[in-house]
Image (cartoon, rainbow, N blue to C red; front, side):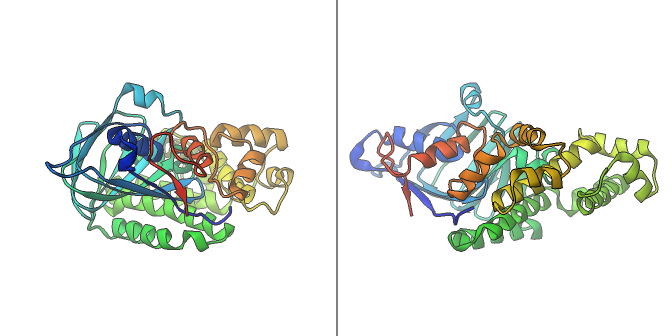
Length: 351
């Protein structure tokens, strides 16, 4: 992938319709929302946003005045893909609500919310926040889908959360100088750090022997992805348990061994597709797919784009294409328009 340049948006007071500009800005950078602004008496509403790409992950910084927003049935329907969004409050206060959980966020606090469920937020004072938008397909690569629940708060003072937020700070200042291999490594590290922050040492301990066994099996799968086959039987033999126990451990997270192996192989193949040094056919063979057609079908089903299109988009620095209609495709859709003004006066600019 080419180096990631920053995209910026800001409210144009002279263009008018400030409420509309804000709603469109937020929807283009944070998935579709219905918003209301609430400036204090005698003040004008200001907002700006910046976005970087960590391969197929979007990192968005935003500053805004008092406002509120909701995602209901219509906005959920307008979001074709599935995302988990990590929201980190940098200054000010915000309330985020989802799934019966109300998270009161102050500087340093974070919350993860799910794009497939209704949500709302309220900002009562000038706010600075950072959001990391992660496609569900990317979470599957690190067995993260089952760890993320709607409205899960991340303890800002925990070492794992501090590590994630500090790492994102570094990335925001260095992404435009990273080469393709480094961007891919940064993307994979970001996913692992996020899962570490969500899961936490406490949850792993609470899971007992089952969680420890699953973690050991996941490490075994990673080490043997190029072996044929990586099966429940192979895992049972390697860990001294029955095949039934292996299946029970994976079924506890709604997965099977074969599904996990397939997604992990697709993830490693995706890295090589993005790198661009090997042919699609060579990558397919290396990672255990019957042929190029089988690999292309599986890749498109998981990532929403053929390997060839994915490689072309990554090489052009547009961010990996995905299926969504609001941040990733939306994201891709928005990126395609960055050379000209937005429809509403909130002008995106590539820096």
